[in-house]
Length: 199
Length: 199
DNA sequence: CCACCAGTATACCGATCTGTATAGTCACTC
DNA sequence: GAGTGACTATACAGATCGGTATACTGGTGG
Image 1 (cartoon, rainbow over the protein chains, first blue to last red):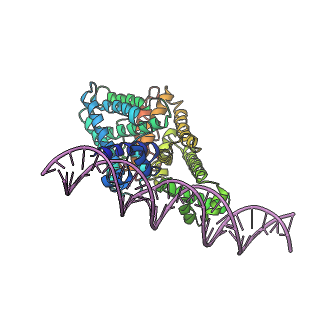
Image 2: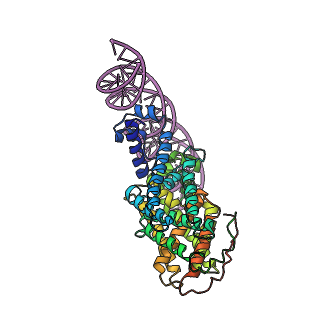
Image 3: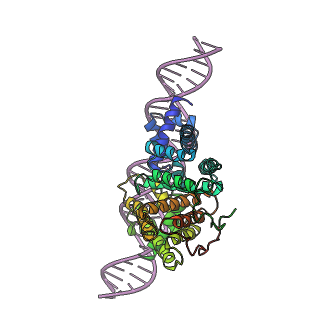
């Protein structure tokens, strides 16, 4: 990636996240990056491609960021995901999840960015499930619950509905894990799931 | 509200939710509603005002919809919120929460729609907290947790990350309530209205 | 030396954006 | 019958949209 392309992608990412994808034009991206539109179209070919690379880059950076927290984790590794998210939100993401926000603006499921957006949440679900597989008997259900807590926390954090939503989600995740069968005491109600989840 | 204005607001709401606010122009709204732009601007004055009334209307309709479920609730009323959300999502909201999606597109906190968007989540938090106040000792924390589960479920449902995310959130909410100190046994009315409806 | 590449600068294209203007129709009311 | 409010139809203004074209500069490698 050429220096100008790198600067353009950085500017595009910042503007897309802050103002929304449709609200930001290529002229603004070019101006903000100190790059001409010619260079933009030489490097990326279209605005759509800039969007795709913005999301792919953000996804990649998040996973690298998260890996750092997972490697350095001292307690249960699944809780490190929440720690990573709290730090990530404070640094790069005060307005909620970039993928969720992009999903709000991209209706066409055939859009090339769509798989990236959907894929990240599927990856997060698989990650949560994996991380609790040897800690709780029903890892699938626990993984789903943790995903809900995590996504909800990102939304609540972006809205500022109450302070430290991600920290609160982490506390709840820790409580769920501690209450899980096979990890100490049992949780009442856990034995009555009712099987309402479709396979 | 005049008939043309009503039609315009209905069309605007449908288009805004499906394609995003910035992606929908007033010409499209007018055409879809069978209304001229002149009428649009006579009734609303600006696109911004159409956005404001769209969000206020959606908020109002959701609260009325929810009230119906709260009034008819047989089990714990807080669980009726999840039942209402599942039905609402199936009917009006397959792409996640309209307020969250609008928040992704409106960066300026001085935008007149901003208080509506933020206010709905604050209202939901207050609602959850109120609904568990006589069921659990720490209603504030429980209300926050339920809000996270609920918001996360709306996101996961919009993404289709796993089936019946809102039903899963409801199950987890029921388990949390059952496990709450001062509420020893399992919750009656575990069978939801429409408990096994496809999510 | 020269060809190539990254990038700059500027101007332009057609389309679309929000918003306004003019003109006229229809129904209802005082 | 004059007045009024709601509406349609069309045209246009000024700006911006995504995208393209032409012309130029500076550095690098064969």
